[in-house]
Image (cartoon, rainbow, N blue to C red; front, side, top):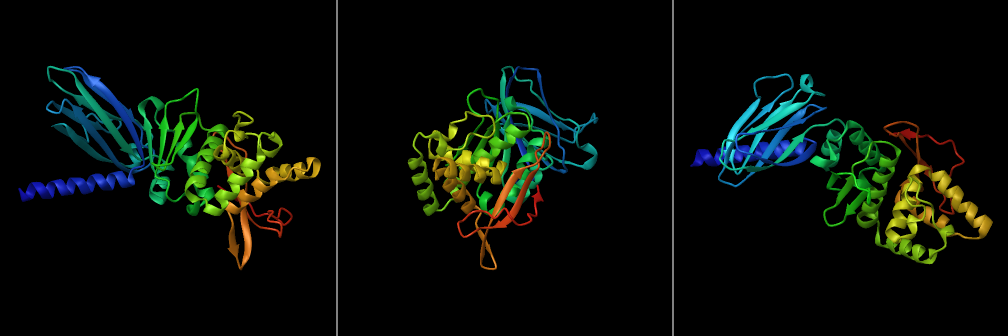
Length: 350
């Protein structure tokens, strides 16, 4: 009995270690008829642990499972079980960027329902998992993530810094939708991304959802109250808002104070100077100051002090496809709480 307990503890520790260090989890589900094979492929692009977790129904039905490396005829891991079991392996450099295979077979007289979670390493998502502790997953219908997705998310998260991203628990990719491109789930501290190709729009949507996380979780009570007041004063006058900068409805910021914050934040990341230039122009040309005040509040999100002097970060998008370089610079704030764009600006590229 003691040997069994120790074995279970060892298996649990291995499972926890794999989950902590592997980087992407794909969720699959199928019904397998008697005597049929169920096969899935996935492609690790970074070295690290692999875990394939099976949940079988009905519970009493047994099945065999094998895990194959690329070009290998013999499995690197195999087992037979019922209810719930795992396959564990390791992706090395020789087995990367090629499809691995999972094969399930059963000889029961009735159909078997199987749910699989395949957790494996992908480049750049590995850094997100190890440095920030964020779990990344995708549903089968969304398709396996590309390294470009992971690369772009890693650039965005690093550009904001640990202070503004710590506490985000999960990023989940769902099938494409005609109605929504992303969501932030407050209670779960989760960003949902509805699958799209990497590029400018994907980057903009990801920053938009990160802005919701920052607004709900990271923004102090005083800045939240100030933002709410600015939004209420903005009313239905489009002059007080910035247009959605990444191809969404142009007046999306007018939806509510939360979308107003996310749209303004995204415009700040796209090009901070252009946002301030627009706010200053509206103040000088039509005597409307609210957009400028909103831009100044976003600058306060990045406020920090060096030698007792207030600084903020400014941003701009670089040129590239499918991965967009993000550029950030540290600049002092003027007496009027405006970023100082006059000094030579040392841009840092992510």
